[in-house]
Each structure stands twice: as C-alpha cells, then as structure tokens.
Image 1 (cartoon, one colour):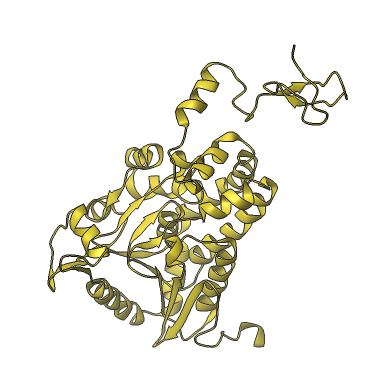
Image 2: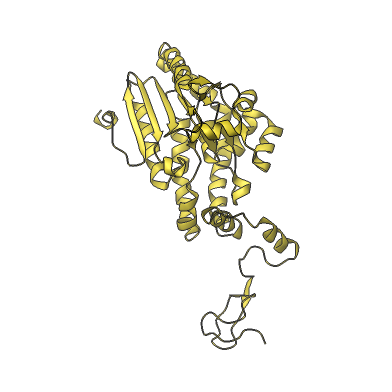
Length: 348
C-alpha cells in the first residue's frame, strides 16, 4: 500500500537529521546550540522519523542520538517554555500531546532503538533514554532529572520508569534531589547497557576522566579531545547482533518486554498531561523557567516563605480578592496598591 511506503533516504527535516543506510536508521536531534533540547516542532519531526523507521521493512535497528558531543538531549526547550507556554499555559496541554506522541513513537517502534548517549542526557533527555531499548554511553556524559529544580515534575517517563529500572530508592534520589549520575554509576545502576571511553589526551584514551579533563576535552584544550569511536564500535556490535535475529520475533519480544513500562505509562500519563498543563499557571514553573532564561538562581526560598507565611503562594501578586472603589474592577491582586484599570488607590 502506498500509505506505508517509506520516506526517501535522507528525508529533510528542519531540526532532526534522518539517515537510513545498510539496514539502520539514524535519528539525530540537530539542535546543538540548544544542547539538543527538543522544540515543539522537533517533537513532531522526531515522532515522524521513528514512525517511518518502524515501518520501513529494510530497517533492522534504530540509533537515536544528539548532534555534537556535549548533549544527547536536555529535554524540552526551557526558553520556548518561558516565552510560549508561561504566556499560554493552555497550549502546554497541546504540547504534551506532541511529547506523548514522540515518546510513544520510541516505545512502540517495532525495531529495537539504541540510545547513543554522546553527552549529557538531562530531564526529558533521560526520559528519552528510558524509552529506548538499549543504551551505549560515552564516559564523559552524565544522566539526570531536573524537574523539581525548574518548577516541573518528571512525569514524562521518569516517575513511571525509573523505579522499574533502578529501584525505588535510587529513583527517588534522582527525582527528588536531581543529582548528576556519571557514566560508570549509570552503568552500575542499569540506566545503560555499556559505557565506552570518550576522552583522549594527545591521542590516548584517558581512563576515568575527571570533570576538569572532560571540560578540557569538550573545549579542545591542552591536548584533550572527545572521541566517540569506541561508542560507535560498541553500537555496531549491537546492530550486527540484531540484524541476525528474526524481525517478527524481535518485534513481539519488545512488545512483551514493554508490558510493565506500558502499564505504568498509560496509567499515569493522561493525568500527568492535565496536571502539568494546569501547573503551568502557577508561580513555580514561571519562576523556574524565567530563572533559567535569565541565567539566575531560582528563588525557591522566597516561594517557600510565601507558603509558610500564608501569602497566597498560588498567585504572583496575592489572591485576586480586591475590588476597586473607583471603577469597580474586581479580582485585583490583594498586594496591589493601585487599580490597574483606573489608577485609583486601593488601600488607604
């Protein structure tokens, strides 16, 4: 049927690179200037690419990665959140529909999806990793969740799947406190299948690189560099093995193995979509997103003080309970001194 004809090799997307060669589809988030965060339009392109890779009978496996060597994916574009969805929270519900379609395009892809973790995978980036079937991680990379640090909740896969992957206590550590999980710990915890060396000094591998050595390698200073060839070699081994397996057996094995992931996902994601959209109207995400885009620390202490002192923390300028004695405007914030409509003093 023409409806299932695969896309042409090298199909053009704006924010995603998509290549099909030798039975392998390679999908790359191509937003290195934004640390491969996904924009709204990128989510739609990613979902389309995974759908095509799944339907193309020439494809045996899918490799998913990010451009460059600094980031695999850092989740949603926080600058876009701050400019678009803080202003129109109702649209965040629609955005979450695109995000669900993207995550489910990985989860439901009938081909094994290998995460090539070429750099940090934070927030929705780690949720993207969790949606994949296998993962190979560069030693300079790290994983982590950031929701409670930026005014959100990691219920786009992390709250659902981290307890299945790393256990309850480790999941709570990642979700509550948002630590960075370095590559070797990620391997120990079962977040990835393999870790490969990626930092070189004067052409030789550096075992167990420090943060300073990683930073120098990413900046190409003092003879240090990032080399992802060992990561690609391990992925090539995985692909070779997968190509030797029966495709329908692989597909159904994935469906069966997804049972627990599917159960907790579909039991929670609809509620998560609605709650996140409603929560976007509150000061927590507004403070978190604006602090990020303004490159300042979040004022969590200030928000906590408003809770403790019962100063209507749900509203930026107090509860909407005041009425103007002049023009009669209603639902004015109780911290306002003057009416925003006519300028009359509200309190004497």
